[in-house]
Length: 450
Image 1 (cartoon, helix red, strand yellow):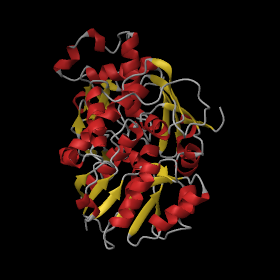
Image 2 (cartoon, helix red, strand yellow):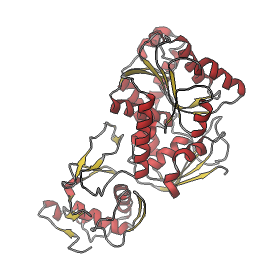
Image 3 (tube, rainbow, N blue to C red):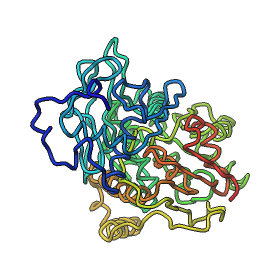
Image 4 (cartoon, rainbow, N blue to C red):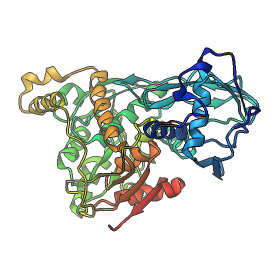
């Protein structure tokens, strides 16, 4: 790396420990951490900055770029940043070490990158995990060196746009069917839904799970949202009955919104039941997560929106460095096609969440205790955050994630990992991938058969 490319400053950090000397030999653990940190920062670079060493090669696909890096070259860049040196971007805007802040096992961009960028707002942080990327927006006239991964950003924008259409005119709502269970994918959906409502200025007045649903909610004139997922069609009778109960009990003028769903009817009788008990209700809106689901829904109702899953609103997800080549996560329920032979399902809830869930589930049969579970929305969402943290920690162990769960596939892509996915019993993963994920290229390998 030439002195013309990187110039030392008078920063006191230039005399820091030899661990961060640009000529030092990285230790194996530091190599892994450096690769994760810097590749996540550089992976979406839209043009090769002049200061990158020649050993870093780049293949570009329109706005999205895939940087294939050699770890020692990355180390030198990282060491230069940590030593307090100044580098030049491709549009001659200085980038200083003080602008790149290591936080645990992630890198976030702080303050500004020279004068050519402005930094978007940080999102909520809890338990050490940042539940959104820091956004860098090119200012007027800037070439915009650093940006979010183009595919992740595109899906984030599309989800935002589609959900705005679904929630047109809504200023406040009650979320029902909160996923107070161990399916971590549902927790990710809930956090994505919250992200959209927060960004759109929609107030979340109350949150209730199926067992804690109250009569007051059933009589409400405020918009009611039903948590999204993949539970329409008979495989999950409790979820179907929850939807039908709302559709029947709510005042006719109350807007009922079903958040994005994958639709699969187990039988023709289940399809007719959905049409009669839900689809025919006035002031009812629904979003399908893939083309196939939307086609089925539009045969029964008019107010149907095609929308990516809300998990995309979480953006790029920071993750710990991998400790092994593969990590396996496989379904152990009725949606499993039995194609994966290795791995566990989502990690179990910790004891306190298990106990709280047990009592909340009892409240359906014990109305006197139901008031104990009418908590603030933030309390419910904290449960989802804890569950998502555990899921990301598990998935981050592998350089490659092998799964038949939709949200393990999506979270893995947003973590920047390579994903090998096999379909569930009715083609949910392939339908979603065909609708939204072609832009991820070789990062995603979808196997319909094991």
